[in-house]
Image (cartoon, rainbow, N blue to C red; front, side):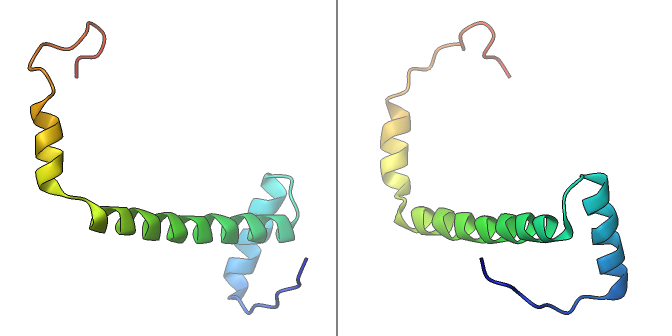
Length: 78
């Protein structure tokens, strides 16, 4: 593990300490989980953008044209 030193507003620190106490975790765990979630969100967003760039609407339309135009199976209605 690596130690990270960060400066945060006093009010944010107090709120984070309160949340950590409510969730029965240490402040280190809370910060680590929050940072992990933010990084995962960014990486997921980048992956989705890359996959969208590779998309081809004409191929999508060709595939969708093969889907039969029938009513949904009972229970699958919107």
